[in-house]
Amino acid sequence: MVRHEQWVDQIVFRWDAGNTLGTTGFGPVAWSCDRETAEEFFRRAAALLRSTAAETAPALIRLEQGGQAMLVHRSPWPAPEGRRSSTVCHALLGPPGILDADLCLGLGRWSWAGSGLPLGDVRGSLEAVHQSALRPSAEDGQRTLRAGLPDVAETLTALAAEFLRDPEQGFTVLDRAGGDSARRVLWGLHGLFSGVRTGGWTFATHDTAEDPAIRFLFVRSWPGTVSQGTDRIRMDPRERLGDRAERVAGELVDHYLRRVEEGEGHEYEVAKALAAAAGDPG
Image (cartoon, rainbow, N blue to C red; front, side, top):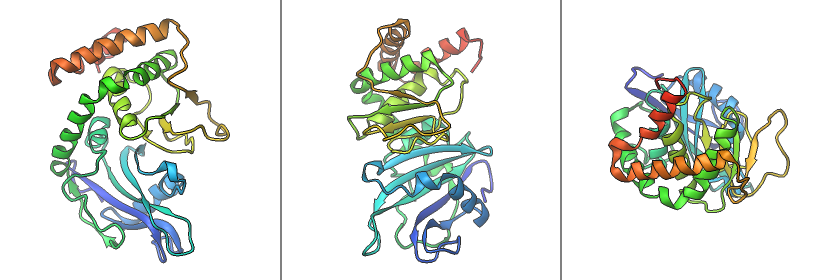
């Protein structure tokens, strides 16, 4: 269990012949939290963790529940002979104040100190991770995301427009580019609207299941059916409405990108201005 506000737990999920749930299959195999916590998070997020669709991996997933945030790095994993390819997930679990959206997006390359666990062999007890082990890698990743923002300006503008039209909604975004494009778009969107407190910043950079636990979901192609029990907005960044929301979004993104070019001290000026206009001190 997390011992202090400066620490986060880690959990590994993979296919195993004898996982902690007492079954043969995918589940938690190593953890620094208590076993019950690892199993509870697995039960609630199993569909996202054990996805077998090739286009869903690798992915970065951020979840929130019960006052905790979980950041998951999901990668392809060769299954035992005769079985479908699976995934392996290395997750961090801790306070949202540590695992906030900015830090999580910066960790997308998953190269923080201690991230190189032998994921195919590790089992049982793990050590908790101090936040100082995460910061250097996150800051490097954040610099890379900032530098790549101009390349995703079109998608960022389209998603910002949808956000302005209905800020409480969940969004499924068609991501043709792949790679780091989803993280760059999310970085820009958070840079614009982080001060406006509407919903949470949960996301999956690539998936196929429109899970209600994910607010911002990026897909390489449209899922075959709309998930039941949700009224998510599906958006193709190339399709434009030409309405006021789109024009305002374009102006906000242009202004934001100029502030980013001026340096880190100016990056959140737009978010602060929007928060002030909304009457939210942020």
